[in-house]
Image 1 (spheres, rainbow, N blue to C red):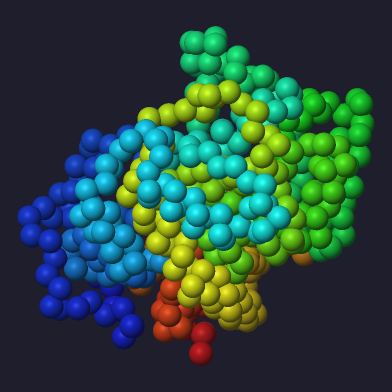
Image 2: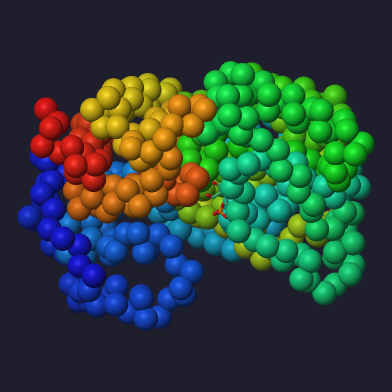
Length: 471
Ligand SMILES: Cc1ncc(COP(=O)(O)O)c(C=O)c1O
């Protein structure tokens, strides 16, 4: 499939001087990908483009077409593509002769990354923190955090939430033959108790607003105290302060404080998964800062590697009771990622990019909110900082008790395609994939933010048949 020609506004007009990569054509590459890669491929299905070059927020395909990237590697690229700070860190490290792979041995780069990371953490957490370098994916760090707490508590239950996303690894450990390795994790495979996450627009209690969040907290507390509630004694509660894949759903700060109180009073370790929310994305360096809670463990990946793969858990020293090798792995010493990660963390802090994300994100969200009256397929606009969700609904459908129309996943897919035609990359998420998610880099300029809003509004108007009616 070829990408239809696109007409870009001034800010995204193709540069005629930029020659496309010689050799393979986009069509040929895409055809070979379809023939050779797994049917489980995902983003490649939604975005049939062949990136050849990228800088900042712009990706250029082999055919010379340019796109504003509002996916940013699923929230990985805090500084956008190929930021000079990242490229300089790569070049410096390569030229220094540092070994690129050394398992989990100490290196100056790892030492420096740990300094840079700890300097960003809330002080009360940093002062008692231990770090474990994981296999370089968020999901491996989530596994590590759960195993750590299972080992520390001797329990195997896990409390997790509706709408949560924590990764894709499924039972790798339970498939491992070595009993010695498996027994290092006291509890074994987790048994999950699913709890309601506050989601005002589609409130699990059908009431929405603050009341919905209050009920979610009350339900959690009462269930945990009910000896016949069916809850396997929990090794941990794991949550996202803003659900990302779940549709950019922010938890109210008060609810997060309630989760901290409820888990604290019952000596249940609280793990906050900051894989997507971390490094300024939500308008604070770490999303926990909004509510002021101090978790027992934080899971981090994506942006902490400054474009390269890196994942860690940071946790309270009191839980550091696992044995040597309890969560090992070959690729836990990615020197380049530590250098790019340290450079990125320092740049985000020095340039105040979390604060900028708060300001630009609020402005973009307000503009999108303002579009709801003229584009009724926009059911809900929500998020925090530069983690924004636009839920696409069927405005003809019946309203539920919270005032929400039914989801419209097909319309959302058409919005995504219409965005791509206009040179804008956005991904879907949320219930039934009906939420358009915006995850631009934190370095997005005001002009780029304007272009994103223009293209998105135009795409939504086209899909909802309102195009001619927009002023
Ligand atoms: C909150 C959260 N946790 C964990 C993960 C898994 O990370 P990875 O895809 O690197 O395994 C993701 C990925 O999107 C995520 O958003």
